[in-house]
Image (cartoon, rainbow, N blue to C red; front, top):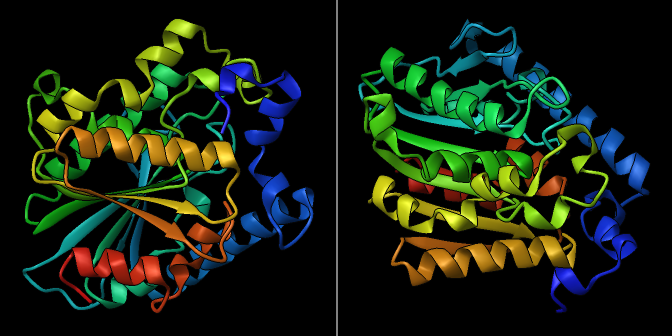
Amino acid sequence: MSDWKQMTNNELEKQYSPSQWSLRMSADDVIKAHVAALKSGTETARAVTQHILDIPYGERDEEKLDVYMPVSSSPDVPLVIYIHGGYWQFLSKEESGFMAVPLAQKGVVVVAVDYSIAPKGNMDLMVSQVRRSLVAVIQQYSHISGLYICGHSAGAHLAAMVLSTDWSEYGISPQIKGAFLVSGIYDLLPILSTYVNEPLNMTEEVALRNSPNRFISQLKLSSLGCDIVVAVAQNDSPEFRKQSEDYFKSLQAAGVKVTLEDIPDTDHFNIIEQLVDENYYLTQLLLKMMGKS
């Protein structure tokens, strides 16, 4: 695999266009199908679970959470915070409740987080928002038995930034027990000259301070005892796969408890869509991590 710095701009654009690598359908169709799948899963979750929508965690319009709760309450309630993807410029919490159905059935609370996508929000703001959303959840749900975090694509990047937080600024030290980072980006430098950065407008400085691969030692410090799963799709682009593999290796080398899951017969989109299915490998893995399988 050549280094991204040796790639032409066209090659980089293609490597960072996940829809061009799906073998199931055309690039446009796979994105349409993805949005439809997430929307439909979220509608089902809202129909079958108890939920509270639009809970504010900050002052801005987008600083809101949706909470999906299990019908039967038990004292041992794990909570998963889900951070949506969409290249930091697309999707919202309105399509982010889809995984609540199989999890709520097993007694798990799911929280879908909204944040200010570009061009309204910039990278520094988004990272600060997801960190603050976690603080708000901890303050509101002090009785939970375990806090877990899951993010897809851009959401996996934001989840990794949450794991790398210096919590002393926030006056709390959350015990995050597990993290699921699915098809994420952990080094933002390669996307600076691609279409992805047009609405984000990141400078090199902004990209560096928001690249999780540069905060491995801080992550080790703040996420001690956290089980991390770095998952990647078989049909993610080579560059996306390399991002996951490199991040996994860096975490492993730092002595962090981490596994790399290479999910067969999936692409960048259905690797996360299938979390609506309780028998899907990643759903089972998540439940097992929480002691709920």
